[in-house]
Image (cartoon, rainbow, N blue to C red; front, side, top):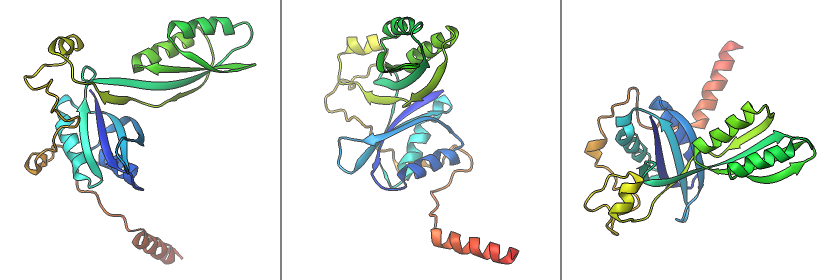
Length: 225
């Protein structure tokens, strides 16, 4: 099952490495990861999509809170958030095939952002399934796809809606869900709920001493010599 986490982290060098290392230690595959500026100063916003068991979301969120660079973490679902992805597709196209690709782009509501004598570049924003659909049609139509660049998921929780709107979206309703006092990011879990961790071979982030590593490297090469 795919889980989507939105994390606010300190805008410091090495933050991306520490988050990626955490998922490596949890033995979880990161499907996509996008990072950018947030509405808060000196804070970056990460959207992390990973594949994990359905019941693992709470433990993953708790593990992210173990990192001192983490400010807030939220796990969002399709019905609770607006989820989009940006994709650029460069397709080989000559004078005889351009018009057909233009029509195909209109059907999928993609934009032509570059036109060269031998290629067309399309820009498409939407759900991953919509992007996959366009790529599949291009391949089945025997068009040569030269390059594909995808951002991965970007997600943001929806605003406060009425119960009817929430039901239409498929979101489970709660008595206090539509309260305007609800924070965008749920409260940080208690330390007692974080431990023990259900994932094997998980430990705290280890500090990496580059000086010590260099000395060990030189010692190893000295012994070989």
